[in-house]
Each structure stands twice: as structure tokens, then as C-alpha cells.
Length: 145
Image 1 (cartoon, rainbow, N blue to C red):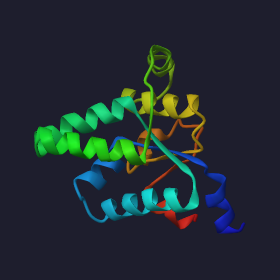
Image 2 (image 1 turned 90 degrees about the vertical axis):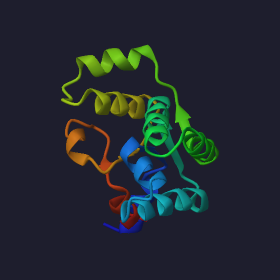
Image 3 (image 1 turned 45 degrees about the vertical axis):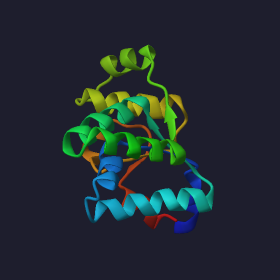
């Protein structure tokens, strides 16, 4: 199979919180993979999204690890680069009834599924074992381009 065709199959990616936090906290080597992925989304015209819940989690973590001002600045930057998908009550019901062991990852999966994401990008692949959407690390995804 032609590897470049695999990358083209992914037109809408869902970015999990760990991938975005790695980027914002400059956790290498992961940070550079996410930066490259976001850059490639602009040049190759594929959509990257996350959820409103991820944004709230990022705000909480960055505010505690850095400062409230830094958290807000980073979230404003994210809003210019990444689509934010809503987090609605139907998702909670689906996540509660799912076979995922991690509730938060189940929420993220169901948001990605509802909004037709082609893949979930995370550093924590093992928590998405029940996913019916392909789950890749940022590095794995970049190898498909």
C-alpha cells in the first residue's frame, strides 16, 4: 500500500489532551511532532479538532503548571489553529454505556465519532483499545504523509 495515500485518507483529526499538552508544555520529543502535525494541517489542508472538554483541561493544567495568563494566551493561540468541537449531554450517555475503561477517553472517542473525525491522535493509544476510529500517535500519523 502506498504510504502517502494513507495520510490522504485522514481529512479530519481529533487531537487528544496529552498531545496538545505536550506541545504547549514543550515536552520533547512529542512537542515537535504535534507542531509539525499542526503545520502540516495548514499546508496540506486537513482539519484538526479537539473538544471543549480538552480546552478546559488544558486551561486547568497550564494554569497550575505555569500561570493563568500563560494558559489563556495558549488557548487563544489554539483557537486560531484548531477547531473546537462541542461537548454535549448525549456524549456523556454514550460514554457511560460504552465498554471503554477510561471515562474521559470514552468521551473523547464519542465526540470524535459524532463529528466524523477520521483518526484520534494521542500519546495514550492503549486507552483507546475499544475505538472504532484509527488511533495514532502524532509521530505515527506524520509517517503517513
